[in-house]
Amino acid sequence: GIGCRARFNGDRGGLKLRPLSARIEDSGISTVSEEIDLKCRQILLEIDKCKKYDGKYIESAVLHDVTQIFHAEELEGELETELDRLLTEQFLFHERILSVNSKDEEGGNVKAIMTRTP
Image (cartoon, rainbow, N blue to C red; front, side, top):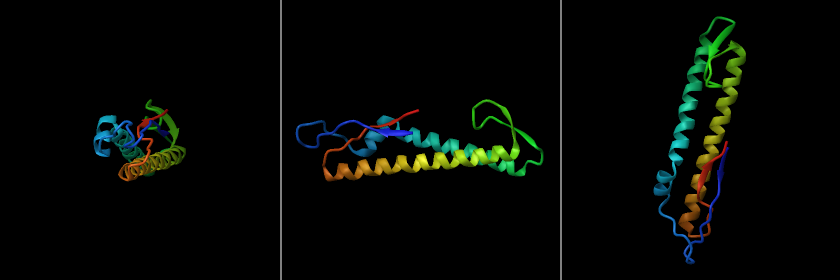
């Protein structure tokens, strides 16, 4: 999942944060979003492959990064579950960014550094 932690003391002599876009660019946050997007695209292609496949067993390396043989219908279900999980993760990730941005604009205390946790 993705966690959020760090400390910001507003204008009370504490750490002053640069604009959100600069912090995102420096922290690699956009790469996390891009990573999730790429994986979602790979999963969608693999789901399409499963739907078109006529055989009983199919090879795939999308779920575990190692080629394995799966029952085609089970793989399709697992891929759909993983896609749902990733899309939820991406949605929550972007909500956290928007939350940090809106708090920055208010000038209040904010927890502002995004990290990706295993």
